[in-house]
Image 1: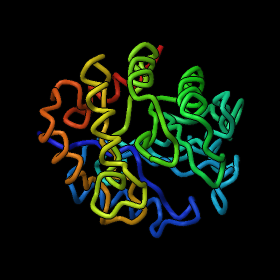
Image 2 (image 1 turned 120 degrees about the vertical axis):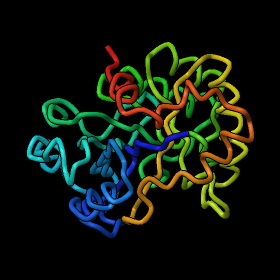
Image 3 (image 1 turned 90 degrees about the vertical axis):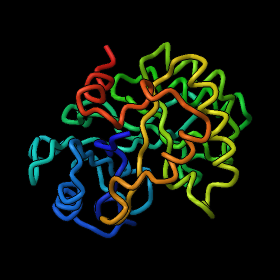
Amino acid sequence: MLDLVDLHTHTIASGHAFNTLYEMAKSASEKELGLYGISDHGPAMEGSANRFYFIAGDRVPNEMFGVRTLFGIEFNIIDFDGSVDVNGMWTKNLKYGIASLHDVCIQPGTQKENTWAYINAMANPHVNIIGHPDDATYDVDMETLAKAAKDNNVILELNENSVKPKSYRGNARVNSLRMLEAAAKYGTKILMGSDAHIEYEIGCHRYGHEILKEVGFPEDLVLNKSVEETLEALKRF
């Protein structure tokens, strides 16, 4: 399978990554990606950028080093109602949004609460992707999540940092298997994301490919093979 897309990446603006936007985009070009996305953490993450950074996204070129470039965000979900940390006018220049649960921003709830935090976030028109729902810190009903994602035209992420060996997200590989099983059942689109925090990780989905092959996941549900399909899938409404 071709691997042309990576939309989950972080620059030094996230506060705990190691390369600039230009260094990351150059790496994406060298790896011959067709679509590169910047998704720095929202301001609820300690040390990350403030709201002014995200509203300035219109200054980022649509192409860098010959690669189509999208300026987005990794929203922090901050309550079980699905609220996120950048809203209103501050979102107007974002091209896409990943919504994720991080334990430094919200403490885990029950399985029902965690699941509904993700599902409620899907009501936000700026949320296109649910980030690393495999994290065992947050017990999730994958069947309910996959069906809701399909119904709301939202993409589920297969996160490389989760499925790689010795991942800090406990039990994430097993949870990813459960997610993929449910996604295949409901026809939910999947996007592999490197979750790169340093340039050499961009476009690296080795373990994502391995797990997709292991379970025989339908290739037509994996967006990374096509820039056009990915861009179309980001059009929620």
